[in-house]
Image 1 (cartoon, rainbow, N blue to C red):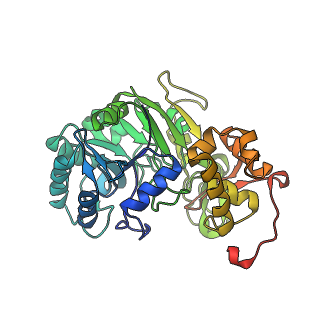
Image 2: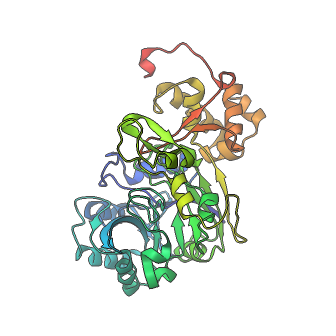
Image 3: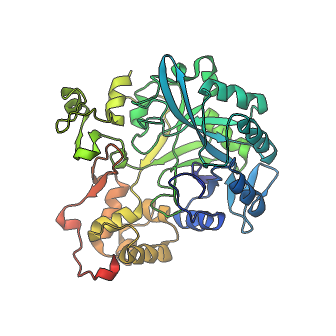
Length: 410
């Protein structure tokens, strides 16, 4: 069976996350998005763990289900801050657990290393190597995946506090790392250039349940809905069908730049400046694109023999807002158009991936229908994100709709 999964989310107890995140909202908007499996997020947080156990029931395959049978998988993300190789490191890792019993053992082990109640994404002072040892001592079925692996500040390969390779990070434990999560500012062709023997997955790192956050990146599996089959696909790529990525230019760290001075640069320009801001002379935040050039072992365009396919998509709400010239993704107009499309075509992924131009034109303005097709064909122009600033869709006037707007819309 085909499973579209977002296995990196957070609860309302994680820092900088919506206080309205609960199981009901996650299920509701996952169904609207077209997702068929979610991670629980933050499984070690005491209050969220209690909510998981109250509202979800685990089946014999390690899958948690709501009363309406929507599936979740035990998952969390932790932050490790430590020194290795004479340098301070900050790396985020996803942890997946086969069942509630093992999850309780993970929680017990982590609780001996630090507090679990202050943040859904807890911080610890031990190394990635120690994490692998800790999890292996509990169960060989636990999976560790480095999250948003190229993000400057918290990615495995990050320019600020990461490593130059998986081997550098995990040393002799590298054999237990089977996949990395691409993150929004990178895509598979960029990571292929690193020539790491590793599978690629993609998830949203959603801090809210709204459809422009939840499922903005996802992984498509072709296997049974069982924990062991999902993890086997991640480990072997057998059943790992494809990833759904945002266009990396949309990510917050694609270009090198300095948000305070509103400047950004591609790798060649940044290198000419020695990665120093030309306005204030502070160091620029080195973006993912430049970091790839630093680490790449293969030329641009290289594709490994066992490469898994991928699709690039910008969330539907972003497209609607761009066409109508609206800045707020949650505006009344954006929601009206979005809900009309969902009412007619069922889910956002169906709209973005499958519905024909002719059928779209029966429901929405032709200009928006054309932009949805351009998105599907990866032909949209994106102004690149940098230094924590999201990228943005840039449309020509032929694809924009000018309407008289009242202040109430905003």
